[in-house]
Image (cartoon, rainbow, N blue to C red; front, side, top):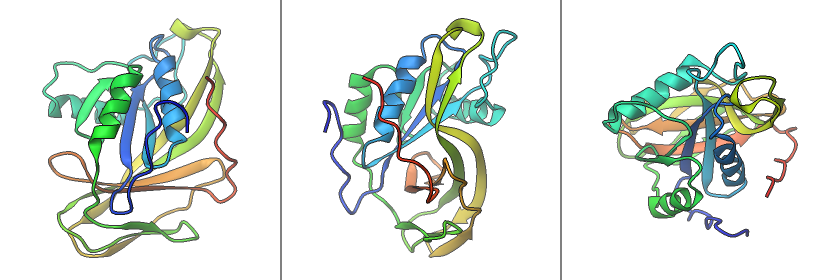
Length: 227
């Protein structure tokens, strides 16, 4: 384990969900992107990089950016009673946020999260079905598709001339349906090589009741993050 690593989650817990709101057009974001890459390597953490679109401009358009990612961040801003959004922002387990490049604060929040699953979540071996077992509570089931790793040469904007290394960059988010405490199967399209899927059961008031992720069978191992 490297300095600052988080111990693997206990069997009765689910992964800590770490969501980074970032942009390749933001000069403050590369350190947070690198931190997300290191977190993605660790057991017990489900890391997702949401690239917002309000940094896109004539100089550079982030290939991962989407209005859906911006809408998700604005939803957190309303929940946290903030007047505005910012990058880089990390949201820890849907309940707390912090400047995404503040590694000490991020690691502390992850260590304090102690998530517990309301129900077990299991992907079929062929990645075509996800099962959420019987449990307590209810929530919205989200399917998040992400690219495990992408290297981009940035040709404009604040980061012109830099090379972006993006981990678990969110490509699409869809709502599968509702989980109401009874066991339920959802049919999904399996990820392609180099891609992964995350399924999140989001509680009405925030936070997650269940969470899990899976990569395509032929996906190469995650590249080691740079020091």
